Every structure is written in structure tokens, then in C-alpha cells.
Image 1 (cartoon, rainbow, N blue to C red):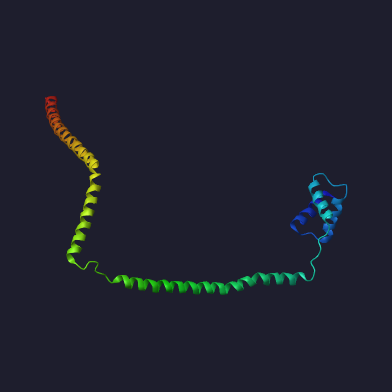
Image 2 (image 1 turned 180 degrees about the vertical axis):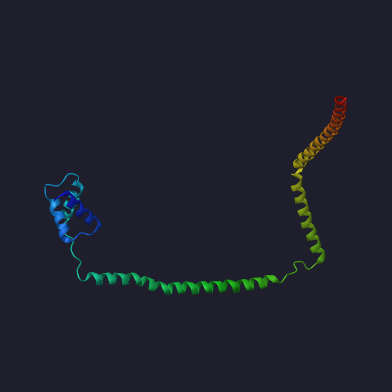
Length: 192
């Protein structure tokens, strides 16, 4: 077989455009001993095709078996629909139960109860609680005393820096004034 014809047939074969006769010609050519150099890979491919034999054609019952398999795949979806409805109904029932329970709990807790029947006893208990809260607040603020000391030290340091800056500003004003006067005197001397 000529190389041009071989290239054309192989291209058609790889594109899936060959006829049965053309495929038989390729199989016969590559099963022979005289294969052109550079086509060893194709020879091996066609040798494997020949060794594996022919693929059996599907029988007439294949289509029926495929339909049955597809129907079996769709059955679980149909069975899931009642399960989904059951979960929906259970979710709605649980939501209603929560709403009813919260209504009764809030109604029961909405009415304030008097815990002390004697006003003097209630006043004494309130003072006891307020004293305890005051003690704990004072104890908590005493832990902040070192922070206050640092803040006072920083404030006094800033005050001394501010005083130094004002002294420098005053001195700079005086120096600028002297500089203006001296420049004015030099300008009058240079004109003469």
C-alpha cells in the first residue's frame, strides 16, 4: 500500500469516517509483515484489535432491559415524595407546638409576683443587694489605680512640654522681630 493512501485511510479511520471495506484493508495491511517505517504504533493497535476478536452485536432484548433498568431508577424518586410530605407535616406540627408552648410560658411569666409581703423586709433586702453591688464596683475600680497614676504622670509630662513649647514660641517671636529689625537696618544702610 502506498504511503499517501495509508495516511488518507488512517486519517479517515481516526475521524470515524471509514467504511467497513476500508477498515478491512487497514487490518489486512497492518497484519502483514511489510509495514512502512513509522507506523509501528498503528500496527500494534490493529494487532490488538485482531487479537481481541469481534465485539458481539447486542441482542434484541437489550432495549427492553435498558427500559426496565431506567424504570427501576425512577421508582425510588416516586417513593420519596410521601416521605418528604411526612417531614413537611411533622415540621409544621413541631412549629405549632413551639408557638403554643411559648404562648403559655410567656402568659405565665407576664404576671409579676410580689416576692415580699412586708415592705420593710423588701427595703432591707434591696439595701443589702445595693451595698454588695457598691462594694464590688469599688473593689473593681481600685484595681484601676495604677492606670490612673500613669495617666496623671502623662498629663503632668504633657503640661511641662506645653510650657516649654510656649517659652520656645515666645523666644522665636522675639528672634523674628530682631531679625526683621536688623534686615530693615541693613536695607537702609545698603541704600545709602
